[in-house]
Each structure stands twice: as structure tokens, then as C-alpha cells.
Amino acid sequence: MSRPLIGITAYLEAARWSDWVREAVLSPPAYAKAVERAGGAPVVLPPLSPHAAPDQVRGLRGVVLAGGPELGAAAYGGEQHPRAAAPQEHRDRFELAVARAAVEAGVPILAVARGMHVLNVAQGGTIIPWLPDVLGDDRHAEPGRPHVVQVSISSRLGKAVGDRVEVTAPHRQSVRRLGAGLLAVAWAEDQVVEGVELQGHRFAVGVQWHPERGADNRLFDALVEAAR
Image (tube, rainbow, N blue to C red):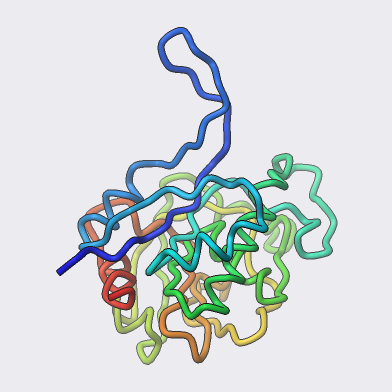
């Protein structure tokens, strides 16, 4: 059986190799390894022209909207928080176009961390630009701090990982208003949304944590299974 082609969104950053410093397309290898372990064929998507996104998506059997820096507030009509990193507007535009094209084409999507925010905004939702201001503390951004996420067992996410999962997922943004067709299907103990999925879609799941890290490959298994 041939491996379904799974696109993975990526950074466009300055990088150094040998004596060269050049702009490069970068992707943490954990994503590609997780896709390959699940039986897919990973391919990295450079964040170039948003207009090319529909053509790229049509050649794929699945998409991973990967993690990365905070989504710029201009993408959802908000106000950029002064403590947030400068937005990567080229990547925001490209990934929003990829998400919309994948939803329209019915291509399976796994949206990871920042990717969950991209999927939400692509569907018309909004983001809390700086979660510590809402909660009054920085507990969701503490590196290495594990917490338990409660998952709706009837959801696609719940069918993949069960009704509870312990994760380590530092983040300073979160879903505010859900986009059209999206349901919240996982929550932290303080009710911060940690997982969403799109109703009526073959497989469009977003999680706040990083399932590509560690040994649990079940979400990538579910993505590749949907892609077949």
C-alpha cells in the first residue's frame, strides 16, 4: 500500500550551514518522523505564496498545521499584545490559506498548538492574544509543567487518545471564540480549550499540545488513517 502524502507547514528563517547564512525553509524533524511512523510520506510546505496553497493542498492526502510563534493579531482583527513576539505575517497568510483550502477540499488536518489557532481563525474564530492577562498568572506557559487535559470521549480526538491525557504544552495564546463549525472537545482544569474539531469534516482536529513529541503517536496514526 502506498504511503499517503502529508504536508507539514514550516518556518522561513535565516539559517547557517558551513560558511553560509541564508534564508531557509525549516521544520522540526519530529513532525516528519511522526508522520513516517504512522505510515505517511511527509513533505514540507514552504510558507510562500498564499495563492498557491489550494494547488498544493490538492496534491496532498493530509495536512499538519505545525506549531510555531504566536499568530499575529491582524489575522483575526485583534490588537497585537506588546509582550507577544513580532508576527510572521507571511507564514500567517500562507497557513490560513492552507487551512481554508484543506477544509474546502475535505483533506484531513491535524493542527498542532499554533496550528490549532490557525484552524480556528481560518474558520472565523478569534484568539486570546495573551492568556496570562486573562488568567492572572502564567501557569499555561511554564516550560516542562505537565497538566491533565479532559477529552470528550465521543469526539474523534477522544477516540484517538481517550478521555484524559497528560500533556506538556507551554502557550500564551488560546482560543477565544470558536470558528464556524468548530467544537471544543478538550479542556484544561481551568476550562482553557485544549482541543477542537470541525463538524462534518472527515478529520480536522486541533490540539494545544505537541503530539509529535514523545512516544505516543496515536494522533498521527489517526491522521494517516483518515488520509488513506
